[in-house]
Length: 207
Image 1: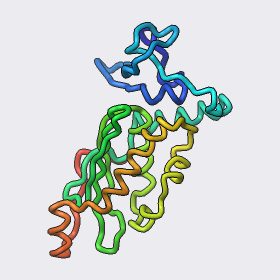
Image 2: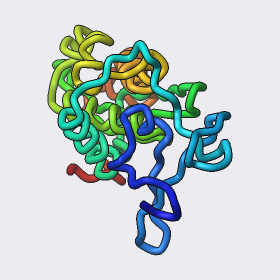
Image 3: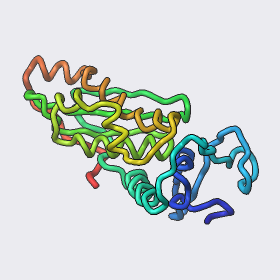
Image 4: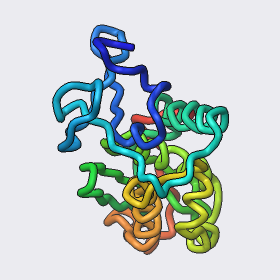
C-alpha cells in the first residue's frame, strides 16, 4: 500500500483498468484514473475504482491472482514496446472509454511473414498489457494467422474474465493490428515496389 492506496497486485481485475504505474525517484507509484464516482475507503472521485457488476461471474481467488500477475508482468515489462525502423505497415487507434491509445508497427517479409512487430501507446493496464501479449503472440507469425485471429481469440489470449466495457480495452490492440495489416506506410509501399528488405527495430528491446 502506498499513501493509502492498494498495491497494484492487490487490485481486482476491474480495478486494473484504472491502474497506472509510474516511477518517480525509482519508486513505483500507483495512480488511479478519474472514473467519476466515489468508492468507499478511497476518498474523492479521482481515486474511485470501477464497481463489479453483480452479473459478472467471479473466478476463484487463486486463479484471479494468477491472471493479475500475468497481466501486470506484461504491463510493467512489455514485450516489444517501441518502434520499427522501416516499418512496412502501421496503424494507431484509441479507446475513448479510458483514453487508451495503441499504435502497432510491422515489418513484413515479401512472403507475408511478420519479421518485426512492435507496439507503443498509453492507457490503462488492460489495454497496454493486452497489446504486449498480442505482439508477443504474433512475432514471426504470418498475415493469414492475423486475419484468422478473432476478437474471441483475443479475449482468450488475455485470459481474465472482463466486463463488456473492459473487453473494449482489451480488444483495442486487436482492432489496431487488424487495421495495420491493411495500412502500408509510405516506406512500405516504396519497398514493395522495389522488392527491397525491411529495416531493423529501434527504441524497443525484447523481453
